[in-house]
Image (tube, rainbow, N blue to C red; front, side, top):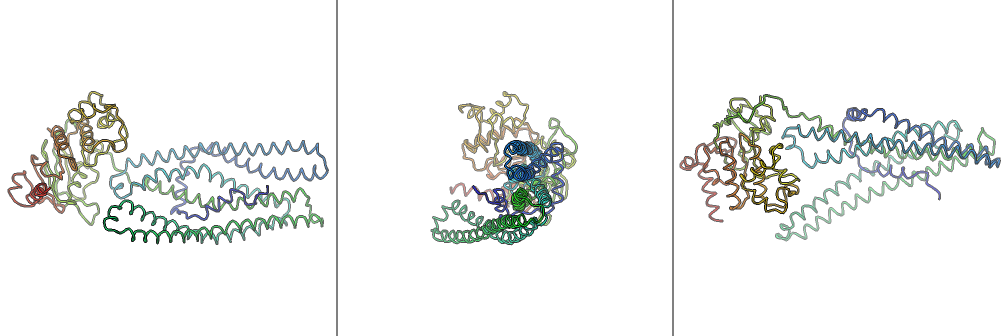
Length: 605
């Protein structure tokens, strides 16, 4: 069967060359940092380079030996000599195959260890970053960097990097071999190949434009599909099916047009390169035969055979090179995205250490001003004094700044102005880990891990015994529910605790905080979206948890904070009212309006 001079690898290379590639901004800096990981395995990398040299050298040498066999044995009909010489050729092929296998075997280990180190460092880095980093970066994008981008680096190291070294070396050795046989014949492929490269670049450039358009159109089409499926009820209620179908048809047509143009331009590349490669192959054969007949130079049949094979070998790696450079460029861009996260300034964890066993729990906010952006302060000169053991309720409209108070107390963010003290110590002087170990949080959207219920509760204190875990569950009013499950505490929960109700998840979270035994408690909408019966169980568990602890409560249902020692009404980043439920209700101000409007809404329901 006759093989195309292009070869399979060349076809893969040009298809990759046609696809849009994300470019790195700082190639030199990214490569330097990536080399910092790779050079940890310098001995193995050196072994890979030697194996590549052996493999490429064997490939070129085998061709040269075949030419010698033709001239020395086949032309002279020396078949016994040919049989003996064939052993040498087979040995060279075997050497090349072994070297190729060895380089792949070693490179797999280098790539896997490198990606393991990068993934480990990136994952560890994520845990040291401040919360505002996660607020300003899409979680899906971070997941993509941790998985897809790191995998891209690994696959490129494993395949394309070795292939690039091999291609460059093969081209260099092939050029040397061709020139050593016939500098005059070498001119043919040297002239034809640049023409092919120039034409390919012309069509690749235009194909990239339409591939980019295709990706854009595909994204917009997927957006229409996702919106339509997610909002199917709205579409049907308003009878907008025809409009949606027209919109879909428009995007679908755009995708078809851009896809057609992309494929048409990219499809020109293969025929052009095949034609030019065949032209080079035929020209070497014709001119070589003519020179042999005329006795021009020292050409022989074996040398012409070598030149024909080298012409193929010369074309194939050059064709591969464009695709490889694109793949490498994409991998460098992926590495840059990974290192961009690693270069983010981490949270400062150092500071004084405090022990929650000796903490009284006095919290003071003094003239605190803070904004997630400097231009738009969320809190403005806020003053709060929570005495040890007091329950402070924070109420107000959405966006007033209630959750921000909690974010500052936990040092998820630091104040722009003013101070927050805990037992007289400025919390900015405290080690973040030590501070957070003194705090316990129960939030509206409870997160449970893919683990057993026992392990989820024990997350509050990893050295807790099974008896302590069960005791915490009893106090949280969730023990009976757990023991009624087929596997009890060893029941494995799915992601985010799916399979059990919101109220049951909340009770498990309360048991987890109960086991941690914090000095200060933070409840952020802990009973929101819970039915009345479950809310009673949660309220009882929370009252037990809050007993003797300084507690900050953000409540959607104002009826749940009537017994708070102090209610702070926050609006537009300022505390506008402060006092007990009775005193605030009697003032008939902002709190009174909030409470009565909510009470009327409940009655209407």
